[in-house]
Length: 251
Image (cartoon, rainbow, N blue to C red; front, side, top):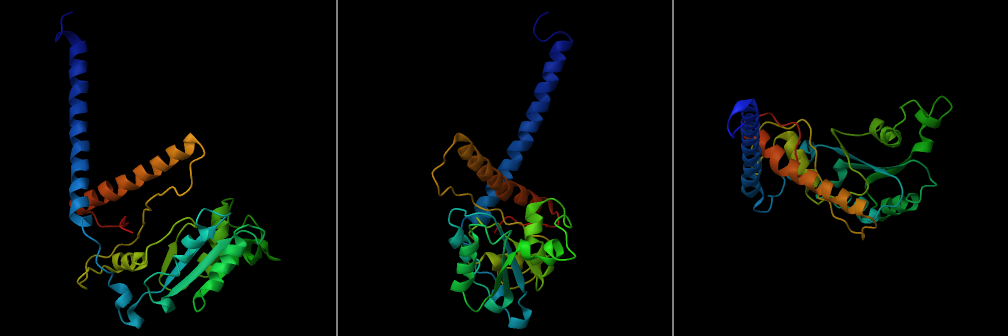
């Protein structure tokens, strides 16, 4: 059978055509993401609007930070929640740990002590009456230990917004303000637009400890690639298609 003849050639040409179309779609999506990246992130973000509103117009945020064990830079990551450029009276901070025997517990106490005047406390899961009280049971909230860890903080949350941040995340000073701007629909000039219903701030992954294994390096690369793809591609495509926003990757 000569080249270009017979059913096998038709299959090959069909596969080539499908591959070409798919490659064009991927290239187009990547191009849109890159263009939007330069368009929206080539200059520093303007300061958020919401922290500078009248006090009775600023939304209250409850920050919940689940902790287990001593992560690298744990103190600084937790302390960043107290250093936000957001009215102190509009912040409630709950640091959650499963037990007082957890090695991170003294650090949590130290963080709260170092920032007096905040509505902040350490919540210990083993002291939660829903899970360990006389009428409680450890399985009341299912088998997920992280859900059990933050459940009391969630039930006792104050205000309008709940912000769950892992203990190994350092947040910038304007992160809270930009998040609230998205949720309320504030633009940099103070005008209003369609508010977001949910904000997901994708972290920039930085390895501050020497990797001990190849798997550690691979994990860091995968996390960085995932965050970069979502932040530079998914969000610009959503905006380009005009789909109402339900999440935001511009933390």
